[in-house]
Length: 177
Image 1 (cartoon, rainbow, N blue to C red):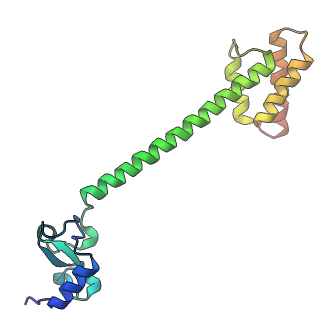
Image 2 (image 1 turned 90 degrees about the vertical axis):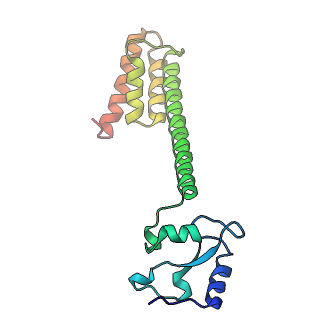
Image 3 (image 1 turned 120 degrees about the vertical axis):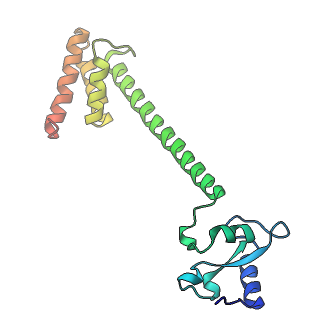
């Protein structure tokens, strides 16, 4: 048995929903509006205004007696969600690039403090990077400055070994070894 909604109830739902289809956003005069049940009558849904929503003819017929909670998101909503996800991903990548750039600058700052130049050979770049991954920047840069000052009359290799010794001692002191 089909129960009809009163004109008063229909108008109250249309007014509450600003005379706009809650599925696709269409408005009169482009579409004919109807009142749809969020929980279908066939599944025990009531005619209370809290269970009613404004829908255009096409959306209401397409939805049939499917619960509103399982209706797929609209194309516009999906596009907006995807655009938001893309924007968040772009921001995340920008932050990660900034972190990598800062790490790169830290490595070269340590090398310059150690040697007075921003050039390195023999895997020294990789060693400095590893120390910076395990020790705070201020500890590594101080080790480079100390090695440079105390070993200024010795060769680059001896200065580098002294720097590494200072860093390894810090790692041992912190229990990182």
